[in-house]
Image 1 (cartoon, each protein chain N blue to C red):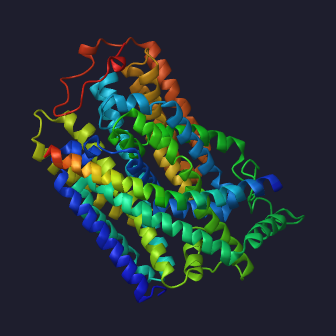
Image 2: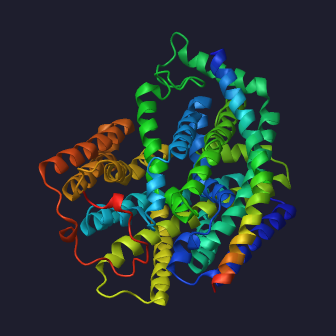
Image 3: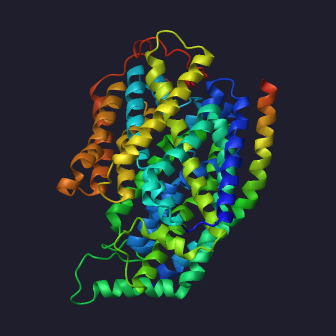
Length: 45
Length: 517
């Protein structure tokens, strides 16, 4: 029982941390990629 | 009504922002390639945001919370398996590598190159049938969340669903995948903030120690001498017979690998990626997200279970599906609930848009186009695909209103998805990695693979057929069909495999490795 409790506890806090991290990391990086993508698409027109 | 004016302002600003961003991308759509696969210009981080947003819908939050309510944290084991499957596929490039390299727009398109035109059409039919049935319950479950979380009158559910779908429809039908990618990005951000804030507030509200104690107490009471057997599942151990058990989890491992390599909404991101390496990186980096996809809403569901069990039990008008949103309406303060509702709207919208676009693309590319005698003009292709998106929205609205779930939401989704997953997965693997596979084997695999899930949908409730039996039987039958059909017949030479090539496919030729051997 204890091993499962530790397993789920670690995963819950890791998931919260990972979601929080991705909001900032992917938020910045993907924002730049959208800008690049629209520039490329505009050049194709 | 739980919402304050501040909450409404947050929600309205978010909705206007999404609509504006979606409509802005419309000007970049010049043809069906831009509409369906974003001109194949998507890079890895945008892919992560889009994949995560599409695959984490409000329906996901509802059914994973239901699993958390019914099975405790053990219910999230499916997410762990899913994350492992996606990571493994990303690491090895299994199926997705050659699929992206083939330069197709949909999976069935590959089957014409590898098997025959008839196989492409039949596979397209199964993909659409399974996909639309699967998507059919999204709106109702999403609407139920909004009604219970915001305190709106239940009679508003249909109107809320209709308005939400109408909004998504506007930008999806006009901007296609380009609009979907940009709105997915916004929705990923709002959703991420909402999920983190809600999870922290739920833990603070119910208490970390109390959460575990509450689940332990319920399990101890259910297994005490004299208690009715089979009324509770082990809250932490997914392998325990009262929880999923080994058999179900083994089936899930196969099922999740099939999903990662075959599910068209995931594959559409692979096909929109710049190249196979980008697609693989996107999979690897998104994989852990899928643990939280099950575990965090599961945490909310488990907290709802503990809270209601310590406060007089679940009210009569609620069940395991609606307990979580009602609980959140009690937990979240004014202002925060606006952010969370916006986040949940984001989850619903990103999933609806991605799914509508995907199935419309398959209908256009694999069911309609192969039947056309002459290629459509570029404008005609766009009009047709947009019309299909609208048609799917109308179907969703009516199917979502009257269909009643035969079991829990997760089993319904798994089984309807399985209508095509088992057979198309078998076709993909055999087509890419087994030179002896041929069109006869492919048709046999498609038909036999669909039997298990369809029987479950029609008779599962009446004869108590276990979902893992229906699922496992469809994988086995599909494999048997492919092997026996291919070995029993000879592959025809390429020139004789199909009628004239489908018009306007507008895709590069397949690599030689995909030609029938």
